[in-house]
Length: 251
Ligand SMILES: Nc1ncnc2c1ncn2[C@@H]1O[C@H](COP(=O)(O)OP(=O)(O)O)[C@@H](O)[C@H]1O
Ligand SMILES: [Mg+2]
Image (cartoon, rainbow, N blue to C red; front, side, top):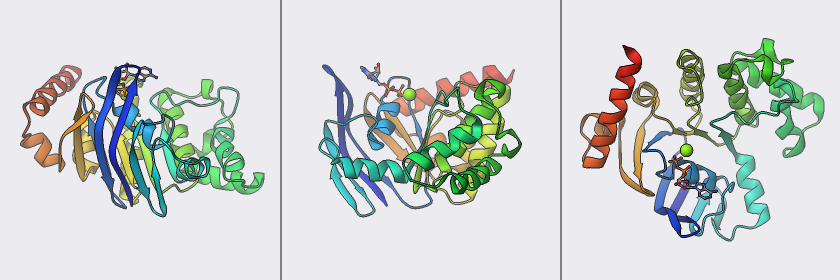
């Protein structure tokens, strides 16, 4: 359904992505793990053309394009078919939850206002926030704001939703409500690529885990393969570190 090949991306002299491949099938839940600075955000942003890669190709349904030289039309169509959940929610502070969710439908998808409203309320219901539709971001907790961010990402029924560390800005007690919404979406069959270090989510929801380091995919496999039998010492070392962090939180 979505196939990316040989993505390269540099910032100045710094090569951040060094030939990353990614293949996504319908219904996949792919979790991407990796140390800070390994290029995870840059990878997600390149898929959605928030960042222009220097090299690489994309096959996405009927779209076949180079990432460096995509036409405006291809970029527009890819963005319409991919949802994106940001680490820091990226909501408009001066718009209500409902307005944040309808915005893209009205602007990019050309929905009439009333139809957009009905669809947005439905998306807010899916994340358990229908009763907060008229609240502004400042009146919502971080967990609720991120759930609005998720409603905005799914409202147009995209083919794939990208999540960039959706819970890493949240206080620990708010992480669960966001992960629960994500697990529900996963069970509903939504195709998802999720950058997260939440092992519980990866273990219960993912069918593939990818470990990235220094701009390359080091290894990938099922959650069990990666967590119980990592092949590469870098994966093993990274896992040991994040498990220790989790453990510290737990005690
Ligand atoms: N717009 C940018 N300009 C320059 N350097 C950047 C930019 N965005 C990211 N980088 C650098 O690219 C590297 C990888 O960043 P990122 O993709 O955010 O990693 P991760 O999400 O895995 O932590 C980092 O060293 C970061 O400083
Ligand atoms: Mg990042």
